[in-house]
Image (cartoon, rainbow, N blue to C red):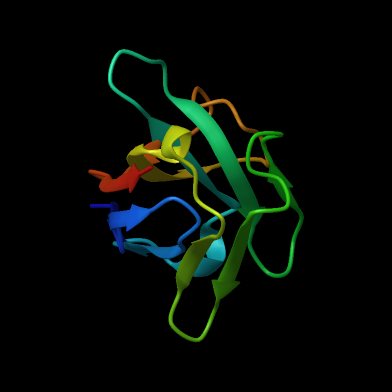
Length: 123
């Protein structure tokens, strides 16, 4: 069974940083095409934040995080990271990692999702 586990969320002040981790299991890492990071704030729709395709593939970011967030992978530990700098209160929400077929920032094509990790940013 494929599982996706996110970690690294927490509470920070505006301007602070966090690094989220996403580690899949139950699937050969080389079979994963792309990872997507999504977030969802209360009362809002889930939105794509960043995506990375494995094996040194392409990355993409939403306009709202471009220049502040960096997505990367470490194939030695089969883990994808989302480094978030200069956090703003509007970045708060539940952050999800998912596995998908291509570098898109919409949730529909992604078929394996983690339970999420909470990010809180205080002003």
